[in-house]
Image (cartoon, rainbow, N blue to C red; front, side, top):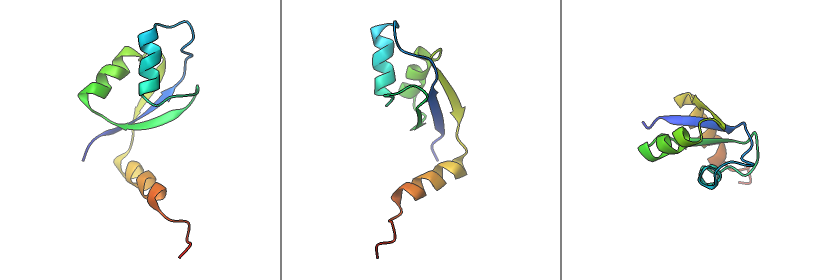
Amino acid sequence: MAETVKVTWIKSGINRLGGHRRTLKALGFTRLNQTRVHVMTPQLAGMLKQVGYLIKVEKENQQQATKNQTKNTETNGLD
């Protein structure tokens, strides 16, 4: 199974290099203190390294990741 990481944006992108702001947007962030879950790839590792001073990265427990994915795919009981 692929390793997942939980990334939280903790410092503002104001007055930062344009490439760093674009990297935050590419990671899916729109607001400060927002958290996103990503599958770890070499490309993602490079992005996290570039903006490492603006974010907090945590390894996500694999069981927790599958639980979150299952929650997102469940229906609302409309059957």
